[in-house]
Length: 312
Image (cartoon, rainbow, N blue to C red; front, side, top):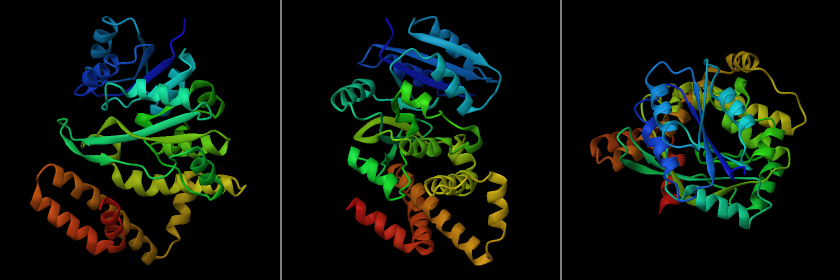
């Protein structure tokens, strides 16, 4: 009999955190799942860790391949998955013990929902809490439908996503040309095809923010260039126009005025500093918090004021 859920962990060089990630899946209160771990050509000890756990639990399926990138790894694992649902988790994050149980109950009670995500705790490299990652909007089926109609960009945690396998495959899976914002592109293409994606309002994951993660190590590339490119392509599609290539996007940006470029950097750095200020306050690094929140406020006062009001 096929399992209800196929959990997918794409792995690349994460020996420090991988054992904790795998354990958090195996210790779920919901038992009817298979765990597909696909190693994307790791050069560290990740492969031995994977082999150790696969020898202990027969629910684990392993795939070892040459480096092809995260999107291709996930797509390959999705094809071989036997579950009705696919659940994703990044190789350095942690599932709360009842994540799968709560998500499958949610889908059983909301059959019109094709995919759902959740909110996450931020944790640092040592596993200490640093706040909560929340995603606004898409709390209901109606909000999901209106997001496409009103040209709103949908964002949620891919590491907390659960989706019907059939819908993931039929929507085309992840696209490598949008990496490392391929998840953002997928969410929006998914709903553009008529699927329903809802953000469960519970915290079911721990999302690890550390210096070797993609979003930290190459923040400018992720948050500005590739994110802006992805959003542009989403809006072009919704307008019935053809997507542009990343090279075309870069060339177009070169033609922007110096003032517009400076303004974009101002907004970007304010958002990064605001996030880091939140991490600092949870870590009790009060001096770092004060200078970062002050700098962010100077750079983008309206954003910081709006953020504070939301939390009051």
